[in-house]
Image (cartoon, rainbow over all chains, first blue to last red; front, top):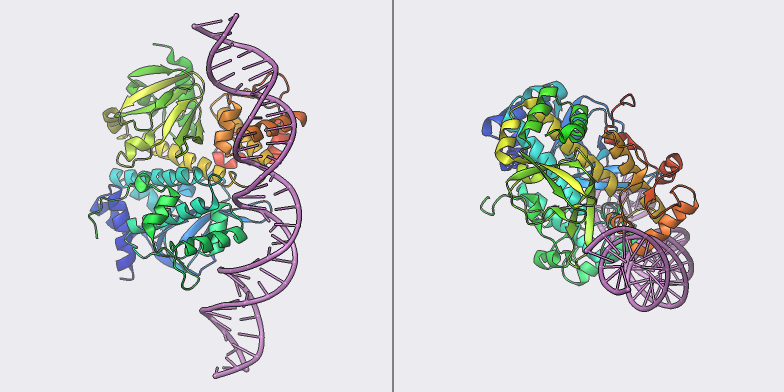
Length: 243
Length: 243
DNA sequence: CGCCCCCTTGAGCCGGGTCAATTTGGGTGG
DNA sequence: CCACCCAAATTGACCCGGCTCAAGGGGGCG
């Protein structure tokens, strides 16, 4: 079962950055009883899910979303390899949040039973580092809150892209290509699809995004961070020594 | 030092709801070396603060905010008695978030040294319940994210008011009056002051808010929750047995 | 008494929403 | 290799909710 090799090293990187010890991560990896594969657009966690398991994203990109009354999808956050999908369901099983997790690309997900979590959290340093992961998630929410609904569409989209690039980099994904559709970006920035399209074309014409193909590929990251007024220090990124 | 009586019972209520044991709360209260009073509009935590203490709001109402480049204030969340102001600074001291905490009314704040926190968190149940508090904070951010930037001004303002009412109720504050200025509401909903004013007048003319005085006082909470499509179950409120 | 902060009001404008087509391109089966 | 399908991307025209800016009130406090 060395499909793990890459996935587990990502998780290890992330948790070590949050202060976990080597033994902590080993135990965690052992507690992952099985891996499941989820195709793009399918749900990893359904909004009404009550399963007694925690999921960890091992490979691929996902999003946490909420349905609006009109049926629309609001994307609340993006998830990258190493992120826990639904820790909150384990910690606050009574809080009904009606939030689902959807795969944006094909994903590999690790599954941990609640009772194994109970045992894992007897390790204080592991418990603490997962707590830090929750706090970091909160920091990301705060940043998005100060961004969504304010400023021009250009800055909003740019900021979103910058944050995702930085978060992926923190877990060793260095590509400039982001696996989002324009629809995803619209649902995440609270802009209409049409306007996201116009904005992306503007970003392309400014030579900040690649003009080749329809993928979202950042070409001039510095300039993009500038117009987004992006400052990634809230992300607790590891010192720029790694790799 | 029985100024504590009311403040400590609020904190106790909140932490017990999150699974802390009686002894945990006692230890926490003992670790609060001193209380400080902060006047309305003053900062409880400055954006650049690096002090080695955690603060807990014991009385009054505050907000977490971030300055925008244009000097404007974005309110990211409101804080009510029992809420920790800056746990994230303790857990992730390296993450520079540039977030400040400002008192909206006169506030009483408890101060705990980092080193005392270190000792307190040796209690697993206390550690776990503070982790839950962080997760709950995240739930609140998610809810605001799905609200801000979407829907009409009416629904946005109504939703904000509903959430704050519910959160205050959860810590035993049952008044229908909310200590916010219209400026605060504008900074929190990403609406302009002028439009918040028009919206509040609309809410008043619909008999959802009190028409007497300029305070924000909810008169018809049911109807308000209806137009806000508010569902407080994400807040992990205690079962409606208390009091 | 006067100042300052907050609330209130009005007029005009614009960024982004809405809706409806049309195109593009990768995937699939024949 | 081609015909077909469908999701995503693209484009255009028109409209409106909320923003901007510029003036007033009004009340609490030194």
